[in-house]
View 1: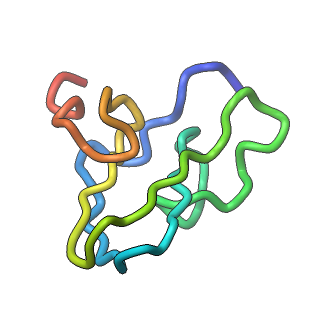
View 2 (view 1 turned 30 degrees about the vertical axis):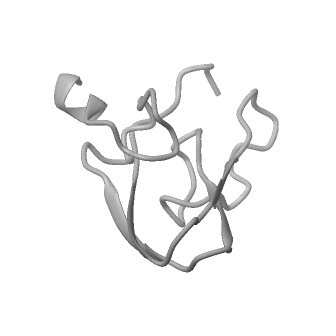
View 3 (view 1 turned 180 degrees about the vertical axis):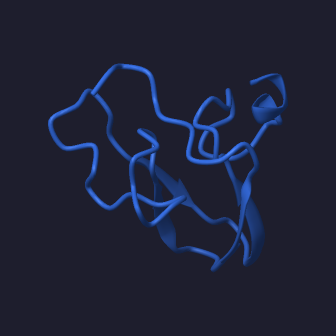
Length: 80
């Protein structure tokens, strides 16, 4: 696996999150449970990024894996 993440999709993943709960965002792009980690990064330089929801509601997780604001989308997919 290269040091460049795979693009899972060129759009954010809208996920209903629960306040206080921690979610582990897939940084490598290989997880089959996008946008969350399933361990597919094993043996690579990637690791999941923890995200603790401050409030319940919809969070928009980065799908392209290139967001400067990871794990949340910052619109970087528009430049790919």
